[in-house]
Image (cartoon, rainbow, N blue to C red; front, side):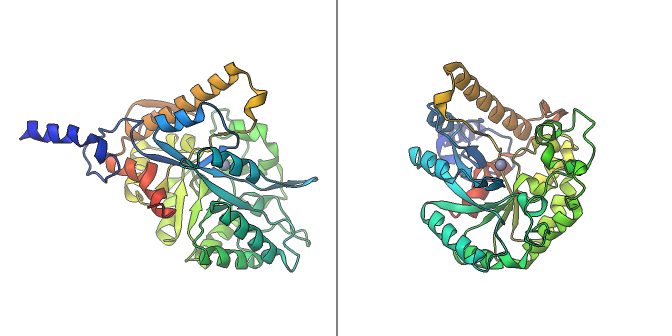
Length: 357
Ligand SMILES: [Zn+2]
C-alpha cells in the first residue's frame, strides 16, 4: 500500500503542483512550485530574465510608482508596458496614482480617464504610494491622506472596473524612530533615503495618523479589493496585521521587502500567522532594476542574475524549512510552512485576487 502510494505520488508529481495539498511535508522543490511575484520592479528587460522566470516557474506583476519633484510627476509606466510586451505570458501590470493637483475640480475625472486608458493597456491593479500621507500636500498645505474624500470617485471607478488597489501607505514604524542600530532591517534604506526617515522630519504626520487614515479608507470601501503592500507597514508586528485582516474582509497583504521584519519575530508566531491567514497573504519581493541593460557590463549583468537567483532561493529556505537564516541583520530559523500554504502564498491567492483563472 505504501509502495503503491509512493508510486502514485511520484507519477502525479508533475500534475499535482497546482492543486491544494494537505499538511503533508513539502515535497515540491523550490523551482517547480508555481509562483507570482506580486510586487516587482523589473523596469527593463534582461537577456537572462526569460530563463530566470522559467527556472522559478514564476510570473510577476510589474508595479509602477508615481513620484513628484520640482520637475513634475515621474513615472515608469511606459517602460513597464514595453517590458511586459517582451514576455506577455509572464508579466502583469500595475498602474499608479498620485495626489498632486487634487484641488483641481476635475482632478478625479482626469485621473479616471488616464486610468481607464492604462487599464486598456493592461493594468490589473493601481498602486498608491507613501506620498499619500507623508509627502504630497494640497493647496492648503495639508498632507493628503488616503481617505481624502476628493479621491472617492476614483475608488468608485476602480470598484466598477473590478480593479484592486495596491496600497503602500506609510512606512515601517522604524521610520519614526532613531536610526541607531545597524541591524535594524531598515537601516540601509533610511541611510540612503533620509527624506523618508520621519523621525528627522517633524512636519510629517505621525505613524498612527497615517495608519488610521489607511484603515478608515479600507473601512469606507468594503467593495474595493485592497492589497496592502509591505505587510501594510505593520511588518514589525504580525499581531497588528492580524487585527486588520480580522476587521477588513477586503484587505490582503504581501511581503515585499519585509522578510527581515518577519525573521526578527518569533518563527512559531509568524508561522501561525501564515497558517491562520493563509488565503490573504501574497508573495512579493520588491526586486527589480532601474537601468537599461545597454549601460551594464556582462559581469554586472551576470552578478545581477546570480543575486536574484540567490535571493529567491533564500526566501524559499526561510518559508519552507527550519534552516538557520540571516536576513537584513536578523537571524532566526525558517517557518517550515506546509505545502498547502506555500501553494496559496506563492501563487493561488494572487491568481484568485486578480481572477486569472
Ligand atoms: Zn515597491
